[in-house]
Image (cartoon, one colour):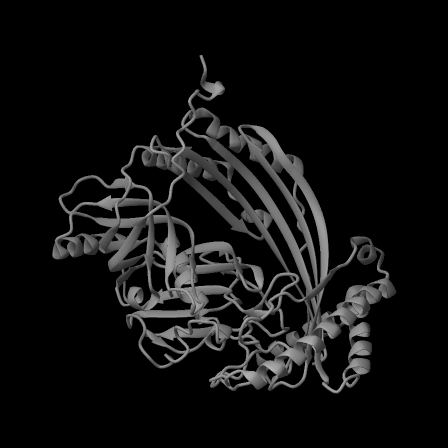
Length: 563
């Protein structure tokens, strides 16, 4: 078995090497990088010590419909290159945070490459684009480095003195482009239009939509360490949404997305149609539901909503660069080895996991945007904080990357989440968790508890000049009563709080782990992410009232329903 494994590894390397030799984009990037690095590394007093090119090839197709009619359909291709230049030394370079009025600039030097140049395989034309980009990036980096040196002279020293770039080398050679996806566009167009007709039956729906999208992305990375990475991913989704408005002017919505990376995993028409009918029932129930007053008390955050909770409230605060930046709140910077949540909880981030219980994870990737192999990052073990999500910007006691440096085109790389997974070592069936909620309601003398079933997302504030709080945007929740009354849908509430206090109020977890898939926006742009969590019981949460439009529903009935 051991010999077979080694042989397989050798064959894979030779195959990758062969493809690398034939790929004109990779060849052009390598040649121009070698030329630029050798000529520019000692061109000025401050040396250029690291250069990296990253080229994104994005192909997109989409189709959407409303009430049986095609709304939009299209496809495009965009190719973007970014040059990352580091001037100075690994201890201090041009990316160092400038304290004071001029904060860190998160935009990188990027340039669009015409699709025709890539399809024609014009190596010299591609090199010319990279040469032009490198010149602009190099001059910009020199200017920033002078500002960094000046800023160091007039501002207080940083507490973390671990430097600006890790000593590790990224020398991997890897080639795995995204699979070529063949979509029957006629069939997909027909399916999306038919699904959109389901909402045509209901007169209380103000607006609705149904859509399909496909993004095929390949990333090329070469750098002066010697890395040659070509990694691809496909992202497909079917989604729908519907909206309504109450008589007191509150806009309500229900929506759902299905994510997959293989055509064979496209959900059936019957499955999506059944979910759409259920969303219609939920929206109708919300229209007649009471507006929730501010509340403190016991609550359950159901699995998918809990997954978003972990992503927003914990995941962003555990990103490595936030422990170092002078502008950040640094919630967890000094808490390594401390208990920050119940001891039955473990949390890690592993971008290598492509599927969870057969479902695609959007946060899957093989290499990050610094050419570092994706790795499992252990963050919390038995409630104790163990580590951070790391890029190639070191921290004291964390000198190396764990493959979480991520970005979208035209942005600087920072530490970001991939697949954030929360696990419980002490699980109970969901029905038991519900019983525990009602017991907690009785114990606290509350009239009811709340179960949060769906959320639209949320946001968290990590900068220290603002309150270190979070907001979870609740889309569907119910009151549950200890006297046996039926669950009552409620509307108009957001969950709010601060992280350290909230984590300490988690009492139990169910055995119903499920997935949140989405696209996360932060300093380094928009990246695909996933989170996994079981349903969670809290001894107490706090909610606030939701801002509403105050507009009345339409005066006239939708003409579709006029007799």
